[in-house]
Amino acid sequence: MYHSKVSSRGSVAEILTPAQVIWVADSLRALRGFPKAAQYNLGYALRQVQLGQTPLDSKPMRTVGQGVYELRDRDDRAWYRVIYLKKIKNEVHVLHCFEKKTNQTEQKDIDTARQRLKRLKEQQQKELKHGKQGSEVGNA
Image (cartoon, rainbow, N blue to C red; front, side):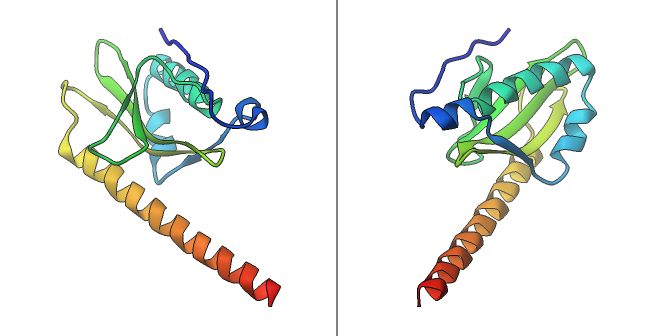
């Protein structure tokens, strides 16, 4: 069901070392609520992302933000989605997991992912700022 394409970017260590998955808010709990087959399929696709590969059923979610992608699966009952921020600095941030009954993604799910991405970027900026200040203090 999935096709992988090995990324040509990154060092050999980055490619061979799986990225850490960071689950934002209730994403892991939501994924665990999916049927077992969807959990397996999306888990496999997420593992490919961790390894720097691109799953076949992944698409950019530009409506959420740059570098954000969606993993997709479905069964007779519903569509299952995992929205994540691609592998950066050996981390994959899963922003939102949800199921839907229609072909279109509801605005509330897009908004949830956007808000979580915004908070994540704010947190990363704070960490970067504090890290730089700490190193400047250490060098003084």
